[in-house]
Amino acid sequence: MMVHDMKQRRKLLRNVSIRSRLLFGFIALPLVVMIICFLLYYNFSMQMIISKNQESSQHSVEMVEELFHLNMERLEDQMTEFCAQGIVYDMLLSDGESSVRKNFVAYAKMNMNLNGRNRLVLFNEKQEVIYDDAGEKEQGNLSLPSTLDISWAYKKEHNGIFLTKRIVYHNETIGYVCGGFKEGAFSPSFTNASSISNMMIIIDKDNHYLFGQAAFPKGKNIQISQDMVNVNGKSYYHESKQIEGMDWKVVNLVSSEYVLQEIHSTRNMLFLYGVAILILEAILSTIVYHSIYDPIHNILVSMRKLDETNLISSQVEDNGKDEVHELSENFNDLLNRVQELVKTVALEQEQKRETQLQLLQAQINPHFLFNTLNTLHYLAILNEDNPVSEGISALSKLLRNTIVDSNEYVDVEEEIENVKNYIIIQKLRYGDLFETVYNIDEDVRHCRILKFLLQPIVENSILHAFEEDREHQILTIRAQAEKGCLKIEIGDNGKGFQEVEQSYTNKKLSGIGIMNIQERIRLMYGDKYSMNIQSEVNKGTIVTLLLPYRKGGITDVQGIDSR
Image 1 (cartoon, rainbow, N blue to C red):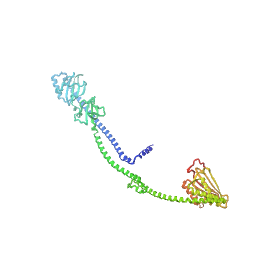
Image 2 (tube, rainbow, N blue to C red):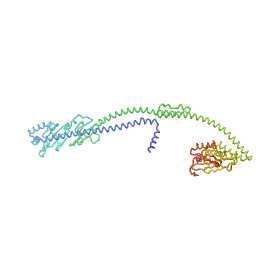
Image 3 (cartoon, rainbow, N blue to C red):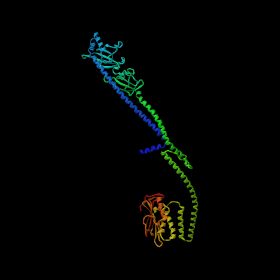
Image 4 (cartoon, rainbow, N blue to C red):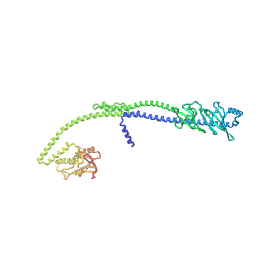
């Protein structure tokens, strides 16, 4: 099935010109393959760069999250240590006595804990502010973000991060302390100059932007649930991680333009290389194409302008050493042979015209001969000389079959009739020296054999087998079908000869006629068919012909019984 399909495709290609196939094979096909390879490489490279960017971004997010968490724990520990000081308890339990307040203020300003804070607010158990080290404009406008034991909150109006802790004394809540911190207290990366290509930001549980390296408005919604983040008309790849112990997330945004900048540069470089390779490939392909197409085209042009009168001028000039050169040489040799054949045909036509003239002239001689024989035949009848009359009639029929009838094959029945006519003529000479017996099967009478195949054998039997002083000499002719072949036997009970080997080279049977029979059988029927001679001294000779069983020129071996 596959071989059949391949043959069908080849047949379809044969409907396209060689020029189109060469152009497709040398230019179009390589160009398509190059484009496909370029697209595959581009897609693979883009996916690889995006994957590497995701790995790098994920690693950066994990590092920032870990640093953020460590600083968060440090600040929580510091806040816990601050709240455990006795002066804090005194401040909350003294109802704001001036001396206690003075000592607390001094302690709060000189305390090294809560490094990086920019504000400290103390609330009593009623969540009323009893201390705030902020400026007068900001005092009193800060509320507790939560009533949990310890919690974090980002207040955009104060542009800071606030840590709130409950203060418990003897299992009772006596107040709260709230510390405000700048963004840099958790990681210096959040205070670095922002870059539009790579930004590390913090968002809350509702995906609202809190702070970071981006210049986004506070509270802007960042849709990290999508594959790509679109902010302010720009697309970003993103990686995020939940901060341990908080409901905030660290998000790293990387501009898609920045990520694909390298692959775009590679694409442009590959495009330039591709154009250069394409130009070079087109030049080389054109050279190769013309090296194949031009010689073939020259042969085609030479074939189209063939001129019988001068075939030499149509020969192809090709100095190459490839298969096309060999084809050109064979084409030129063919033209030379055709030129010779044209001359030979012209000579044969001239000879044929001469032969036709000779044949027309020769038709006069047989006509005169047959008229003369007919006159002799009627004279013999008038003189009541029956043997001479029969002999002349037989000779006339024999010559008519020989000279006038040009058919190479005759029926067995017609060939037997020629033999009978020949024997009638021979009896004019030998009289009743021998008798002839015919045993011809009905189913072989219309088999086709070569004309005058039996006469030379009969002639040899009459001339060499029979003796004038012997009686009851018989010539037997038998024809029958045997094993799908036609078998003809011509036997006599004459002198015979000593050599019993199957050969016709015996001196007594070395006539031209016998040799002609064997050669005609071999040339016309092949080595499968033959003539066989068997002879025994004083008993006779049998000549056996094995021929193809043919009727009307077609071999018929069906329904032939073995005899």
